[in-house]
Image 1 (cartoon, rainbow, N blue to C red):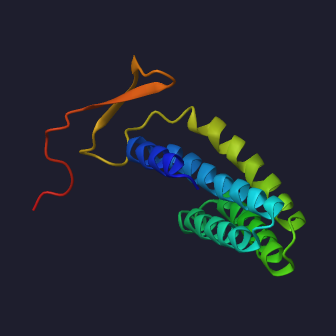
Image 2 (cartoon, one colour):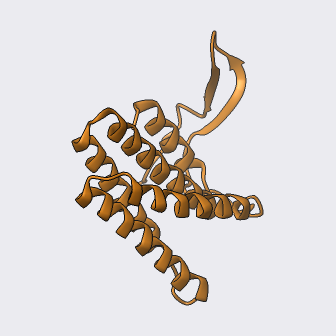
Length: 158
C-alpha cells in the first residue's frame, strides 16, 4: 500500500463514525487485495503473500467487531471465514483464483455497508481530533486539504 493511501485512510479513520469505520476497513482490505493482484501479475510472489496476509488481518478486525447478539452477525462471520479461507488457499497454492472469489464477496459486502453508512449520521468515534476541510484551496494538480485548530492540544489528557 502506498504512503498516500495510508495517510488518506488514517485521516478518514479519525473522522469516521461507527459505520464509516467499517467502510474504511473494507476499503483497506480491498486495497491490500488489489496490491496482491498487482504483485501476482508482476511475479512478485512474496509481495503477493504479504499483501494477502495483511488483508486477512484486516478481516480479523471486522470479525472482532461483530455483535453476535444479532442474527446477521453469524451470517457475516461465515462470509468473513469464507473470504479468509479463500485468501489462505491463494497463499498456499500461490494462485490468484481463490483470492478473486474472496475479493468478489468482500466487494459485494463493501457496497452494502457503504450504502448503509449513508443513513448513519452519528458523531465521529474519535473526539479531540483535527477537523479536515477539503476543497478550500486547490494545488497545481490536486485538491489541498486544510486542518482546523492545529495549535490546540490533541490526544489524551493526563
